[in-house]
Amino acid sequence: MQIKDLIAEIELFAPLSYQESYDNCGVQVGDVNTEAKAALLTLDITEEVVDEAIGKGCNIIISHHPLIFSGIKRITGSNYIERVICKAIRHDIVIYSAHTNLDNVYHGVNRKIAEKLQLNNTAILAPAKSALYKLYTYCPVAHVGHLRSAFFAAGIGEIGDYSECSFGVTGQGTYRPSARSNPYKGVAGGPREEAEEVKLEVLVPRHLGKKAVDILKKNHPYEEVAYELISLENENQTIGAGMLGDLAEPMPAQSFLQYLKDKMQLQCIRHTRLHDQMISRVAVCGGSGSFLLPVAKARGADVFVTADFKYHQFFDAENKIIITDIGHFESERFTIEIFSEILKKKFPNFAVLFTEVNTNPLNYFL
Image (tube, rainbow, N blue to C red; front, side):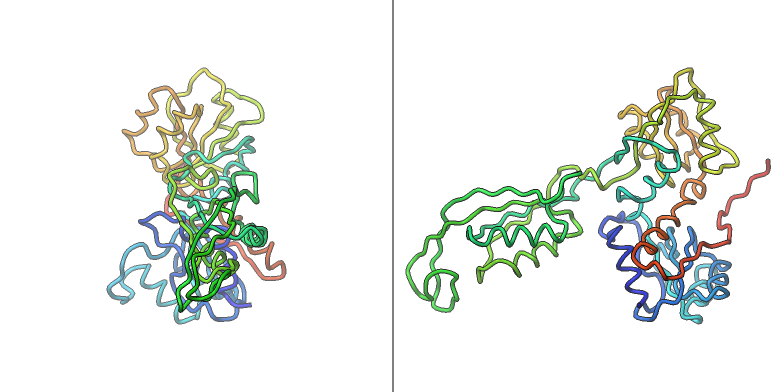
């Protein structure tokens, strides 16, 4: 098994196409066409983490936060990023990161937080738009079943909790084959032909757009396949930022803070003024989630669990919601469990190790 096989499994779970435009997910350093020995999982990449990987015989480090965010013009070892790159290359270690693509998939970072808080009825807090395509094509009636099955086998045609979704309407298609053609019906250079066809429609998630067209051309009987692949403004309920869910039982705000502290293994919580109301609906966002505060308020959340709120942003709660800032590292500390679950499911005998290095750059004096 090669390192690229591990990466392929992660990207099947969290496609790179769902990363934000500012991000730099994927391979950061190294040759993925090498045999995978063992993987070290971490939230951040530091020199200590690379030393740990060397000591434990790991030749791939999988992180949530990318090592490289912006362009590097020279590598001289003048900062920790450059030193990590140099050391990883010297020891043939691949560095791979899945960041906002892992944030934006349903079973990613925010779902993990929801699991820790034992939330029910979970849903994406801010579903993504322009993350879906509609594929239209025109296929002879006798071949529609085969084409549908090929789409469905690839995960095309899924809507929420429903799979194998499509729509078809029968009509008459016409074409006139040229002398150079190889027509499905009729002869090259012959007269205009009529064919009973089904106009087939399926929803395609953005990351499967190219694959859908490839499947179409491979499984369609026509020499020239007519199709339309159109970007939609529909919200994709399985892709987006944050998550919303309900507690099993409502609880007072003070009790919820203690519950949150215990479940997320926190030292402290920054929060806005506590209300007398009971806490029932909880919005969460791993990492810097202040941009989602208006959405959390609009969707009726009683409390918003996230990190990196600035001083003046706390006023935006306006006593309509409780903001709990639990810290960036603390909100994403369980992300490495997701990597482990992905890899162990596919490669149960492969060595997947959690880092023992505390990469949190913040310390607290209590």
